Length: 139
Image 1 (spheres, one colour):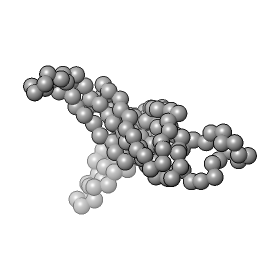
Image 2: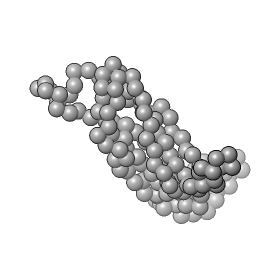
Image 3: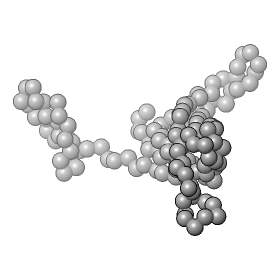
């Protein structure tokens, strides 16, 4: 089966049987929302840290990226005299349930997203984290 979008129509061809389905309207493209999630962050050399957001929608798909920033370093160039390497090492969710039987904590019944960033250099790095998300209907 081959999927092609032609002039805003989704067309499906069944190659094995030679049949061609009638064109059907393609789903409307979902709008991706992009924003600075956390700004003016700093990680010490070879350090990592996690950030989180509570009560996120289960009907959205999320992407995260981290970008090193240049600050006034006291040198003439707008860049620091070393490479800045950051990586997102972990993205995970916690679905908070009912109150825990063992100690009575919990009970928030919310979804939390967690992101861990690691500085892969021997220098302090300043950065921000961007979040992009798109609503997925029917999920």
